[in-house]
Image 1: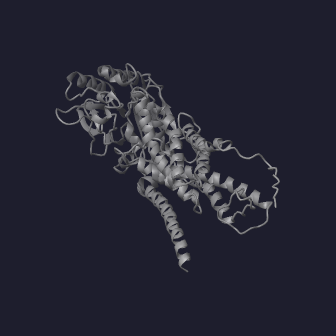
Image 2: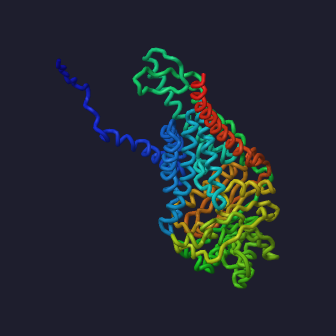
Image 3: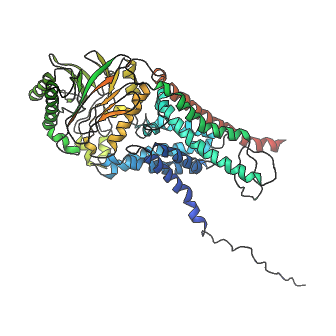
Length: 558
């Protein structure tokens, strides 16, 4: 007996192995990189702070439901998309290798964050846990390695944003958490709306906490629980309402009167790493601009300042060891006739160099010093010098390492308590906060950005100072060797600023304040609570995984 097999015509062409599938493999990686680019575009000098929201919404779509290993890879791609363009200034004079290495190492933290977000994305209220995981990653990156590198905290891109008042509530962790939560909440809200729309045209199957717009098995979409919709809505609304509720904390009134402050920008003879080869010229520039200000005050063109602030490295000649430098500074300070803060490099006979701010009195000369406490790795000192030299000989430009100071910087300048955070220190929460807890009524961030040319670095750093102003409700004065120098009110508004690579003297009456914001009072507590939320979410997933693995064994024994 024979059997005849009649071929059946397929309803659609048979799939070609590796045919249409391969473009899909690049959709999520491409989306991850694009989310990072959106985060970069949200940072200064662009006033596009709101791009962080679609950036995190896209990242949420990319990571939700992924396996942990895939989450790491997608997070790492997002980190590269974000940090490679953001940190381009680090290679301004030393080439691409240090820049790419720094961005890649920092992106590893975001890769780890991607793993955490993919894991907690299966939980109810996952945007809350995912945003907390992001803050956990930022907290880690701000501490390790080599004391951390917090550049690129999401909060630092929000100086022009509607969420900025939250800095006064809980500092950069709470501000950053609100932005990330709102972004993830936007994605979740859109996802649930699409799921509800898909479910309206289908029969009502059993409810689920994990709705999808369409199911791969062809079954009808599951209805969306109301609780999930409520959580998604709150993820968007709570950060917005919280920012509006925090507005009364943003206050630029003069609680303790005012002080007339002058910030000197002397400019440098040339750009790049070798600008300090003409250290005497840099000093002369700042002395000359101070003496010009003194002449303008005498002529009635400018009000007489109560004190004057020079930038970091305004005198790289140690005035304690160089008589000519001391004389130049002394003449300039006597000409203006008020206490002046000088940024100098002190070089003792033994030990490390010190990046110092010196309080210079017109009658008594140098009377107090503040040594920068958080010196910059690979810039002011070289960790693992012999190993790093294999990759870049530029490490030998730092011939003698700088060492950190150990005292909080607060100078009494003509009766005003001025908190000191030198350049790189402005990126670290603790380095600014403890000046306020030690009585600072006004903050100064003297900086030297000449090494980084006309890059975006100076604007990124200026945004940090604006966030710090709101965080601690203090006016912030930023004197920079080559710009941008600025006067910032306690509400974060820049009321005066210089142009880059142009000598200038900013003189303005600034409010003095002594009250503390909740952020100043609580310190690291908000960050610790958010880290605990992240740990709780990750622990919850771990417990569910253990129970799921035990269940089949229990079922088999029954």
